[in-house]
Structure formats: C-alpha cells, structure tokens
Length: 447
Image (tube, rainbow, N blue to C red; front, side, top):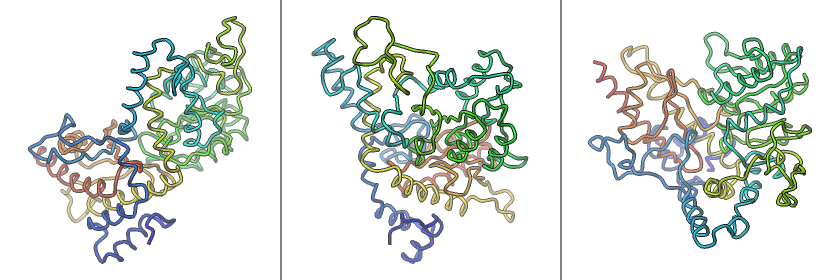
C-alpha cells in the first residue's frame, strides 16, 4: 500500500498497523513509513549534527554518536551539503579574479540572485518575474507597506493578528505612525474567541466584511508562528480585495512549508514576492534600474517593471550561495509531494502525543501535553505547538540535554517542527520516547 495517499493520517496509521499486525505506537510503523517514503533520499542532501555536537547536550544522558533530533526547521533549517561548496567557489573566484567576479563565472555577483528566482518562484507558486530576492524580512515589510499602505481619513486601518510576529507588528505600528495616524485607532488586531487559541476563518472573513471600508491593508501571516495555524490565504485575499483592501502576507513560516499558489490567489504582495504592482515604490535604488542600462550611470531612472523595481542594492554573494543550495534541493521534488509527506509526518507526531501524553483524569498528577495547533491537516503546516501542565522551561532544557533541537516561545509553547525535506518517521518516534524522559526529569526537579 502507498501510505502517502489521500487518506487522513489517522486512517493511514490504522491501515499500516493492521497490515503489520502491531500497535500504531510500535516502532515498526515508523520503520515501514520510512521504507515507503519516496522523499527519504533528500535527507542525504543535508548535514545533520550529531548529539554530541549540540552545545546543550548532556552526554551522561544520551549517546553522543547518534544524529540529533532536529525539529526546529521553522526557525533555522539544516545546512544543505552544497552550501559550503558554492561559498568556497565564490571565495576562490574572488581570490583568483578579484573585481572580475562581478561579471564572470556561474554566479556573476552583479546579478547572481536573478539566476535562482525561478527556483524560488516554484516554491511559492509564482511566476519568476513576480519574485525578487532582496534584503531581510523587516526591510521588505517596510518597503512593501510604504507602497501599498496609502491611508485616508476613511480608509486607514491595517488588519493583522493580535499575536503577529514582532517583525510584522512593529513594521505596521511604525508605518502607521509614519503616515501620521495613531496605531491605537489604525491597528485592527484580531484575537481568537474567548477560550480558543486560534483564529476561525469565518471570523476573519466576517471582520473584513464588517470593517473593510475602513481597512487599507490586510496583512496576515501565511503560517502563524506561535500556534502553527495555516491561514486560508485564498479566502482572505478574495474577501479583502472585494472590499477594496490591499491584501498581503508574511510568508516567513509558510514558504517551503505549505503549498502556496500566490499568483493564482491574486495576492497583492508578500514577503519575497510582489504581484500586480501598478504603483511606483516610494524607495528606489540603483538595483531597481534596468540591468541593460544600469551601468551607464546617468542618474536617469529606468525602473524595472513589477517587483524588480523594488530592488535597492545587489545581494551579497555569500548569502546567495546557501539559498541556491537550498532551492536546488526543493527542485528535486515538488511542494505537492512535500506537503503530502508533511501531513502524515505531523499527523503521526500528533497521534503519538495524544496517545501517550493526553490529560488523564484518572492520573491527576501525571504531566500532560496540550496541542494548540489546529487538528485539521489543512489548517496547519509542519509544526505542532505544545503547551504543558508543568513548567515549560524545565522541559525545554531536558529535551535539549537529550539531543533534541526545538524552540520555546513565550509565554508557554514549544514548537516541534518535523520537516519533510529531512525528518523521518523514526525521528518522530524517537522524539516521543525522549519527551517521556524529559517530562519525568522535569517532574523530579519540581519535587
């Protein structure tokens, strides 16, 4: 049987365990899924640290020669093996050819990023001409908001999540102030319903319908960094544009995680990409000038059309190299295939957590885990956000001691992100065992 078909993760696990004649929690299930994983070879494209190489590891508790359990790819992914080779090539070219590296070699520094925009476009569901690789996240947010946020007395609000990533929140706050408005009046922050932890799509759409005439820009995450919720970007875009709003997304946690179709959805702008640009960017730079006439140096702006006109300067070649290495791995498969594996991988993690660590009323003193990420596979990416009945800092520390790389987000969440590019089902099974040890150790520390 093909375990990566369209069935729900729970049904897949039921069928596999029945086929094998074992419990769904058995390591045999993880081994079977790994053996039938057509993407397992992609793991070989990355450098996976050994447990002993992670600074927090306590080698009295764990075998340092084993590969670590790396579940923090939503914060920093593993290093592609080709990254060092590409960087070394450019350092060698610099050493041997000096300034000629700007226009020579497989990655001429003057336009190196242009050569990989097609690869990036495939990942986000865009056309190559709609993608520009430039700057950092916050800089790009500011550049885009400077152009798309055009407040008026009637339409001056920006709609975003109440607990948006700080880059988004601060950028929106400062852009509103820059345009002479008061963030207390112009920042429209959406909170989940009382007693709930994630936003309902119907509530987002209802807010846009009711408040849309006063909203200039709708700016949401693709995947909410804290809860792991994957927003319905297509529905939000359609609703916002229907009310005359510009709609944009911070895709920092969604790119390479969810299957994006930013072009088909008609998104007005997003980090890394901009669509249907019909306005002149308020900030222009030399690298927004047409490449064919850029070096005439006549200071007569020949602005590139679309997103390319938003470029400010050339990208550092040593940053282009690891990005190229990463995007080439994505090009070995498809986002649809990665997403299929991700649904099952994250679903497997969810099932095991619920089996072993759900709240048990018959054992009131047993530590338990609560998953705040939506349970529906289509409403999340490759991340589960976990809260605990015991202090989270101690659990995080005990996991790190045992060779698990994850991250803690205040006030009370551990983000566990099994990435389909390089994580295995055996990684998940191993993590569940280590989590039990961490919970037991943290409980002992409290006594």
